Length: 327
Image (cartoon, rainbow, N blue to C red; front, side, top):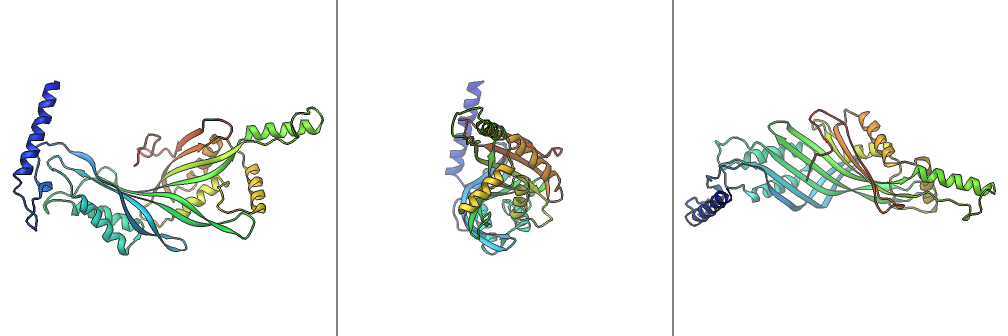
């Protein structure tokens, strides 16, 4: 069996070398066009394309258009079993053409996916490519007002727009984003308050009479399936996240803001389980905006050397699950 597999690979290698040397197919400039040669391998590939293609993009938010110069794109199509490869440069050139004068929105992604499915066909009489995907990753900047003072700072949200087409599910649009917040442990807070009362009552002389509960920076990674026929902004998702978990980390604080943040944390103590349930309630109450969703949470513990983590999802049939993979 091993020898048979080795012989098949060896034959394949020899056939590729022979095709390269004797390539008869030419492009419009007379250069060998090996990529368009048919293959006898008859092995289809579900996703092939490009990662980390860098370019500037324009994204629309509620205040207008913003320009991002740190975007990276991943572009994929499926490859039929009788094809040698896809035109990688065409993936890039189509994206550059569309982003040059277009704002990135739902209609942009629909155009991109349709162009990939039609313009990466080698022959005009071929069937449209069955599967295509485009990811755009960048940092989404928003002004964040300080909690109490008249100051403000820039908050940057890692965002990934994912547009997909498959013959099974049709066109789908997802927004992935990261939200950072502070979480104060309710158990630690309760014990700190217990100690302070006991110290004040003379029941213990340990310490200074001040107990500090542990709290930590925490992260939430959201994957939201968006209605592609409705206008939606990253701010809309951010609004839901802030409603569920108000203790977002701050970009610029003065002393009065720091005190306000301490009060805010004290009003919202939470285990990772509490944060998870808060998100579940808020997102399920906004079904028109978000068709499906999955959230991964992690509390980067200041007490433990390990982190507390949880995953929760809406539970749509054949929808996002804890084992959903996006790249």
